[in-house]
Image 1 (cartoon, one colour):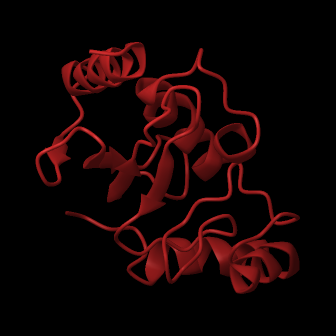
Image 2: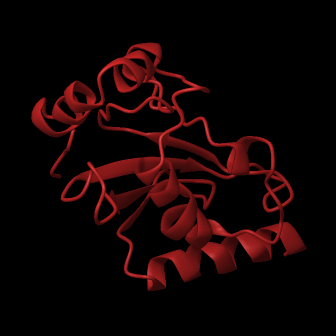
Length: 148
């Protein structure tokens, strides 16, 4: 077994042992879904999302592909595809990071501190900048806080 595949296996086991519900897709360890709870003290608290994770062959030297499967209203998440705009994953990824970092640090930070200046969802970014109260109500009140 090569080093990247050992690392992939180790990171996946670490994620599963961290109380995350992980559902494997197909037979390999390259694609799976993870149940993710909205962070406490955020607009998304109480919500549960299914996150699609795809690991490239060169993981951990190349970042995982991360996306929301069920809907979420957020300036940095594409409403149609669920793709995430997150610099630490897309541009600043390091092999020092692992899958647990993604779910315990990077995604909670994304939901706690949306960046309306670098949007994937222009409508959400514009509403957040124009009327924060309406944005908060849209996140909380229109079914965008999911319960699996």
